[in-house]
Image 1 (tube, rainbow, N blue to C red):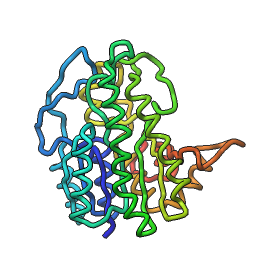
Image 2 (cartoon, helix red, strand yellow; image 1 turned 60 degrees about the horizontal axis):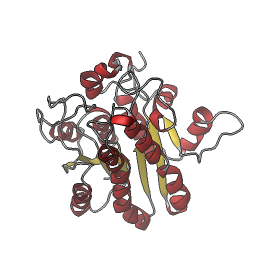
Image 3 (tube, helix red, strand yellow; image 1 turned 90 degrees about the vertical axis):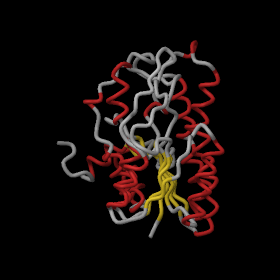
Length: 292
């Protein structure tokens, strides 16, 4: 049975990816901070407020959905801002299952500084963005890559963001986002293309998947105060369906990117190897009933 590791799998896009991979026949290892429903921790996006109210979702509930698909789950809690916990989780997965065929770096920094202006955001919070959004994914890649290279196959999917390539249309807190999110996602966005150049001839595939605006549980609960209306977002299963299709059809991604992602004379499938999830899901009809 092929294996996958998904970060940020307690809710939202990560949960959807884990479930869709399970339905595609993958055993799925799940990591995030929230192990059981109802846990409280700080998840306010701004320095100007505090919010420890529980968010819907947990590793336990995602594990139940994964196992309902008839495959194995493995719960390995970790905090992406704590590199030791990330490395420990990776070691646990390798010790239990021996290998990971697909790594999905979906989790990201959650907390103050995400929706604050540059002048008021401490450097320490920007460091946390970089640790969670860039260095933790890299740490996991470096843990899983040797085994992938030894086997001559492996797929790495980094969930990126339009914030990696575009400036917000408004300031943070008023419908835009802060520097921490934008510049850390931009750094993450560069990994896939370079990794592809270095390791494609040894069986490694690396992709960015850009979700677009997604109506996650946290978006609905937290982000209205910052100018985001979750009712306009696509369901998380859009991204899950695309990732499941991508890992089952990695060679097809080149054709998809040529057709829908890089139109015109300057097109190139090497530019970050970016997949626009909503476009691909819509054009391939990967999620029945969406768009309605």
